[in-house]
Image (cartoon, rainbow, N blue to C red; front, side):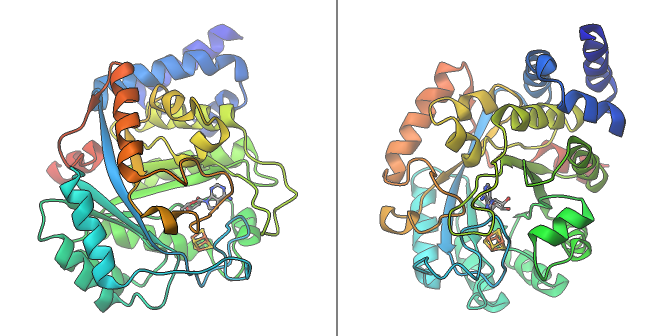
Length: 352
Ligand code: 5AD
Ligand code: SF4
């Protein structure tokens, strides 16, 4: 059996292709994990190098019109104090992040109607007066809105598909359609963004087969960034009593994604760190990840951006996190990216 796993991994390394059945098999193979992680780390080093790119994350509004069943910011969660930052406060925070040395700022929020395309364009334009890449993570919008942000200077967009399984998608996202999520991702691609997507691992009733199809979808889309993390049940959501996602499974998904999409940017996500507070980030960086997003939202607001419980470092000041992470990166023999950390997958596409 071991031989078979090794053969599959070698095939993935050499061809960047595996069938749906082969991916499923490796996802289910706890005893292949070590081999998989080692191969992914090697592929990561050869394809994207030792740099870990740091992103400054600004959570500028926790108001959301959507009702995703897993998420603490969902519309029906009345127990949450809602906040949003005014345009100029978002800009000030971004400028502070730039001063702290971040070469990318990520603007993330729920789907908040206050932030019209015009307001977003104003924010993006102002931030782009600095030498910095701007990533948006603000949900499903129309093609026209995406175009407006792009023309204002936005470089990247994160929108996880969460799951490519129609039935599970519908169950998890009342009032939303998988087809529209895909439409968004293809619009973003066509508009020239570096496009990030990804999945939740361990959603109720999700199978390895479904995750295998997610990975094939990332390839088909030509994702430039892929964020993956275990589902963590939140008490103020309908999924409060469900089992959460598994750390090791999430790590295998990450490693497989690195093997099959060698040039993509992959963050060590906060959800991975939440399940293994001391080592989650290090393990993810050692299994193919090459990006970390650090929260630069001020301490008093951060606690309110609760997608799921137990988010680490909720009470730390931004600079403390950053110094600790840099230490961790150096201790692993890795380096801190000094560039904007553009996705190599994207660079290759535009040069084609
Ligand atoms: N557990 C883990 N990840 C979550 N997200 C939202 N809710 C949860 C949860 N309960 C993730 C989603 C979303 C991203 C911003 O946060 O995948 O795309
Ligand atoms: Fe809103 Fe995003 Fe949470 Fe869904 S996952 S409820 S869109 S913040």
